[in-house]
Length: 552
Image: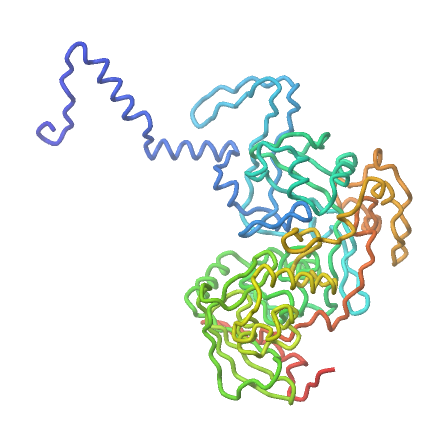
């Protein structure tokens, strides 16, 4: 260094100048200053280009369930992705000349002749929100103590998964989307139901590329839920608190969309853009809280992380629960995220629940539960381990766990055998919705699916137009030619809801499913009280928790 701290550059000898320049260029060519990185990032955002992490992690628009039916959902929160903002190139079109490159701009990739160019992903607005266009997709009707949703058209959307890149749509459908036979997807292509980068797919042999955006229009049927209303317990400028009935999911998941608390509040109470502060299992009833703003949501979640939120549940369990308080600290392991089953296991996450018996009627006990942690199915799994499962728990009070039904953690079968037996039991009862599964989700490892939709051949598809008669005055669908008909409306809201109830391509329209009884949609587990540093909300005690209640 020169005196004063200045950098001393080498004295360049003639003949070595070029060598020094080469070394200097190599040293600095790979380095980017913070300012350069900032400019580059800004240019990418301005042009709509996203990094792989942003493409996979941004939340936007609508909550997505699965695409198409039968594809296992990936781990982590799922969102419905917005489409790309360009048209699909056929490869025969003349490419536009490259744009001039200037500050903050990227050079457009022209591609080679005959290459299909994929438009960049569209920048998406963060957050999850539902609006009037979503609520108008269909309508409710009530029958036999059940809330039902009229069938409707719906777009499942997704960007191309990494494992699909380089494979044809035909390959992807035949290996991953096995809810329907290939003949169904071929008929869907002819009917204009499958889009790639917002252009109708003409041939399933097209090879997928990174950032390809796919949209599949399906005829959607939702399972019925209880007709009990979602009652408001409290509402202020920060929060909405409701008494959730059993059987209704909190937010769209699996086969449920309109039959969810989020949609019912939006459609019947005009409460929109709510942020769930916690979740209850679909069969659990009681106190459910929503924030009206993201700031309130973050504040409550900080309280949850700091263990400042007190939760109190009540349930009815089998047998005579001990009179003294019982604390269970058994760790819980998730057996299957797909099926939604957990069990006590030393390899699981630590958790703790405090139980207190409130009453005993000679057959079953009412128990107050205070979970000190928040593991999946924590109360239900701990009660099963203690030998007092919830009286009508369809998962943890099942003989699929063995003669002792999981008491003391004794399960005389492997996890694979347990899952297989649970799925078989609920499939026989036509109650796979309890497991948030449909027939198309069942892989050969769990169950050899016997769903009629898996056995449809080409001849049968041609006969789908002769659908079974529907109730509520909906006439039979007239036979149509699958090669020429156009079935999917561009916008479901533009089509009369009554005209959407029968679809010639829809296997669900051909099935006759027996409605569950209202009592089959109730599990005796209820969120009684939620208390934070500056709030406390109660829900009324359910009928089955009364001291004099007797089983039928």
